Length: 461
Ligand code: EPU
Image 1 (tube, rainbow, N blue to C red):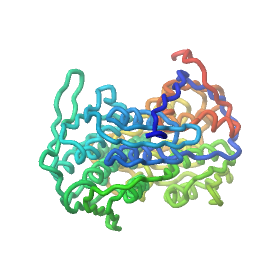
Image 2 (cartoon, rainbow, N blue to C red; image 1 turned 180 degrees about the vertical axis):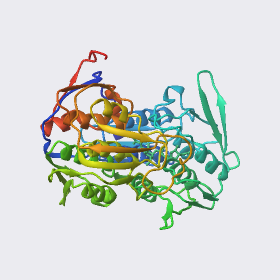
Image 3 (cartoon, helix red, strand yellow; image 1 turned 120 degrees about the horizontal axis):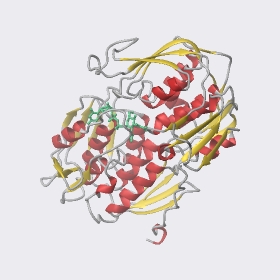
């Protein structure tokens, strides 16, 4: 294993606060990184086999750090060149199938270890309570139900500090037809992973088909899987255990690409986002065009530019792919604060993803929340009492504020708001941003933003 020696991870900077002086248009070229929600799953998928996988375009972000630590914990040997974005991983044998409690609540990745390991060990796979951003209840009932249909036994047990899922498939996994109640990204991934080594054929109906799922499918096909995606949201997997080494370049992060584009337009600037992939951003670009945001799809990326005053009066509804991503919603709401007229946003993926708007209102935005489904049909949260629709009225100037970032995507929305706002904004809780945005400060600085790390000693008001 000459080339796969483990290197020590680079030290994480302790700076947890940002200072942003608003008012400067972003101008220049910036490269969007590899997708967080793809590479983290691909690393987990690699542990299905003992083959060597080499990934390119790997972002140096907190969630990859956590996933690398998780894979090392169970026996993966990993060599990650952060500067080049190349990561090699091989898991010759499992050291353990117990995921320690320190991973509890870290993100949504540990639960996928159940699907990846069920076919590789007879031992119990023990996964502590999963986490992720606090944007709704985020249960894993669809995962548990689907894996059980494949023959797994999964129990939730209380442990010393917190609960954990205990899973095994002592009688082996067998293919089945599984109908997901909702096209959940995580449940689709977990079911795909488990079905790769199950005996026979698995059909996942009502599966998620997000580009990050297709990315997983592409990776698994290279690894040796026989897997088909149909137009009716069905994914069919014929089980097999014949695996091959893989080389894979991680798809561009469509959330980061769109967010950088929106930041360019909000600040009345012009930014070429290298690597932005047109195919995965069609729905976003249509909405951007509706509000008058400028963009040009060019060779190797997309250029975003201010093309005159933005026009609101739009209805936006988040949804599963190919709908408008829930992770584009927060920066788009900031964009709508700068568009003339009233717009309606209906969040249908998460029941509680508007918490961040309170701070925007304190900065000067005119946003009202509603418990009804506004603007279109009813979603599964109708009559459940969650504030999951909003009306935003623009254009409103924003003023600076001291802000504590509550979650990853709210974090970027606040960065955008601070870039527009008059005065100096201090943002603490920057570790949330680092979970998903690579080199965010140097990228924005290279575009002319006045942004820097500061000590976490901002006055608490
Ligand atoms: N759901 C259930 N039961 C389940 C699974 C999901 O009720 O067993 C519900 C969730 O509560 C939610 C909805 O189904 O209301 C969608 O959840 P999904 O499983 O699709 O989301 P996820 O796999 O937990 C991933 C991304 C999210 C992204 C969503 C939707 C990762 C690590 N996370 O989450 O990304 O918003 O899909 O596309 O891939 C982010 O990057 O900031 C982020 C939150």
